[in-house]
Length: 563
Image (tube, rainbow, N blue to C red; front, side):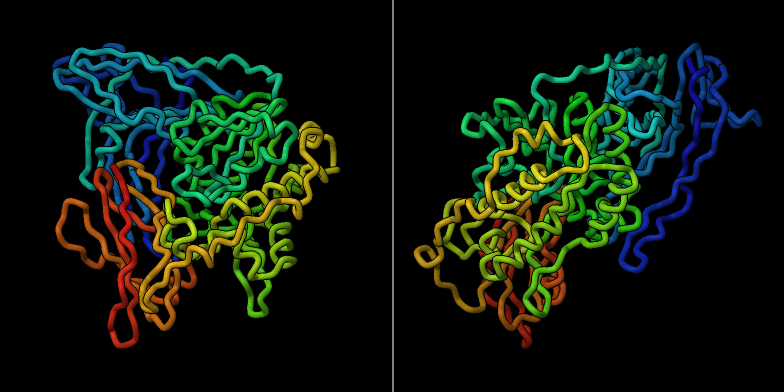
């Protein structure tokens, strides 16, 4: 069975370089090609032999037609707690596959007298996170490999991923057979689908977070037949933020989710979930940069010069499937220069996307430029109405009862304005006919016609002490592999030098300061990324710290459910 494969032994011998000039660098892998396994040993030795000079590694052996793959796995969390890395020393099984999707059937075995567990990756993406094998048991499982660049890499590593922490796990996985066949080619749909692949500025939100809204949530309002649309959860999507908006002639699938970059959307398998269902003739709109630019979150960060490499995965994936990719430059944030003009945010990422689109003839919608121009047209004060810029009491029933000052995320009105700008750019696209089907369906609505929200501030405003922290909110909660990540945000307080964030598990009695950040740090960050151990409910509040060391009144307490 192994004649069509090549093998690579992977190790991580050197420690991580760590933080260098504000960027975290994990361990570098060392890769050594090795030969196919040959039959060695017998049942009495379990086939365990040392390297014998033939190029066969210690980590893979064959006995009685069963491969035994040895692996060492551990987790490392860098010092800030934001970067989580899994290092898996094992043998990669590698081949080249020129098509799009393949069905990979793996025949697992356990010829030993002890149970074992394992997880399986394809092209670095976890396809099976926890497989338990009892003594004498055999199982066949089929997974889908979604190809981008044509290189197929299959790995089996010991342990259940969610239970792997800082200790090193070492063990064996037994494979009897691997079969790879092309998936049946998908046909064009009668009603095309537009997949939105992006972050929290595009994501759909549940009612509790209203008025927070992503522009992808509102895009269906600007296509023909909106009055007859249906909304429901996206199928074949393992996160609840995926929502489908079905119109009479078009289906919009908003697969966007907060906190993701072009790197992490791929690494977490979320792009794979799209590639497993997308069909020829469909569209994929890709907008990234908000999280790609956040160096404090290493698992998401991409340096501007590396941005095209990660975007290329999306380009190649769409070309293999006869899907029309469209780049959307990142919607701007409400960031003003000294003259009160809004600046184009993520300018380097925008330029890299524009350059790649020009070089590879990819349709591009410059939402970054168009949204910045619009904000400068309406002025800085009016622009607050587009973003989550709310006073306490404006929306008393929900996540933002305490108000919020958020220069990144949108409220419903802003999401509608920016969705309208996207629809306008679709209608204006005239380089070729690749967007003609969407142009025909885009409704001609002028941005000035988008209804503005009523002013709720004067009627609902709640008086607060001047030293109190207001607008404390928790956003973008997610749990990955036993660890939670989320964003914290609050309104700035006049005259502060720092802020203390207090936290505790809900079942504990005493709050403690879990992080302090300076006034400068708070001003430089749109939101503060945070992490905590999963499996528990955590409680947090924030105080302002003044020059003399005194603290102001605490914010409202917020709970974060990471179970």
